[in-house]
Image (cartoon, rainbow, N blue to C red; front, side, top):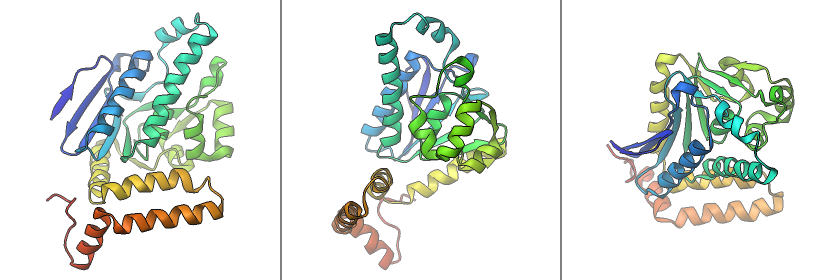
Length: 264
């Protein structure tokens, strides 16, 4: 296992998996500007590492991410509009970078995910939560809104649920998070790693370019007209069929063997 030195996160790689852990357990992994910038850097590193095929986000200690750090909020309350705008743009940028990363991402929600913590998990492809996890979009209680994270949370839970939970700010249990689509799977705490590892194994059995193209397809197709989608999707599958990966995958299927991207 290799590691890199950060102040607010832990970044490590093992085999074809990169792990980004929020590492401020003393404040329940609440984020500040330093954590945002370090996560941005770690996502860049994982994206540029050709050996990495899956990225897992989680938190150290008992929480996933408790939203914005109170000490940071004491600072930004005195910021000008332009300073606040810059900080907010950095948050929006890291969320978008996670969402558009051309590699599958998993949020391993080991505990509380409050406020902006829901942005991190919603920007991921698959969310696996402990039964003990609790969620909340409580910004309105502070006279604020879940602004930068809203595109990703709304995509996950839909406008109707967003209206309910953005406006009430009420806590959401793990089971309820599953029911509304905020979490894909909920498992007992002691089974969390087992569930995440099973998903990793499934992802690693698929073609890496196909997975990247799937993410692109999901992000783009639903926003196109049917006429636009016809051309776009036809071109995508035609290109994949003649690609080295597509040729290998189809040959492996026909020859009843594992494709070359699957390591024993």
